[in-house]
Image: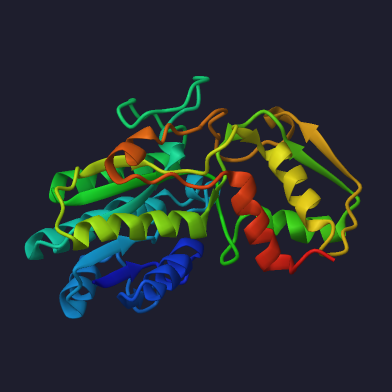
Length: 296
């Protein structure tokens, strides 16, 4: 296949390009400043000029807090960008895999969210991603929307890399302990995307639509995730941190509200494509190893 990856230099885009190339696909990587999908003409030329058999949209405005003060930018990338890509793909009969987020939900329940559950985002970021999903559905039948959660990897900015940096600088860290989710490795998600691409390339009867795809295992809090990072990193790098203090969200106010529970039910993607991501603990060990080196 010839796969166009939009957002190719982000943490997911980097892994998607690497995974696609490893599987022998021709990869067309595009990112800012070469293409700005918030501009219809950029999306049109990116799809039209590259002539792909599949488009993967890994581009997004992901600064959850800044989105509250920059709503126009968030909606331009997260809503208008997917619309432009979907429309360009529809004109050429090209399928699109578009990545979305658990933040389309409000987190007011204590059981994993299914694809059929109504969305109810708490802030600008989640709302912009929810509207991006609607635009993809409205403009293109041959689409896969993948909602994922708590994405991290060796590339880009993410919680794991932030904890490793702070763990080398401070003895005490205070981390929120009442928000639950399913950490997801960018590399594992990229493998899932390429797994779906295999079905598309074989011309199989695809169940187009929305799927949840996140790391497996018990839901964990940000505090628990931070402790897991330091446990795995301890034998690989010198850490200064001695204590990770659990705190409630109320003690760490942010411009944007976060869902308190955003675990995703990923059974549908297993039923349709046979895809099950590794446990977040297994994936975390691989990423920490990539970032910090082998155990001493």
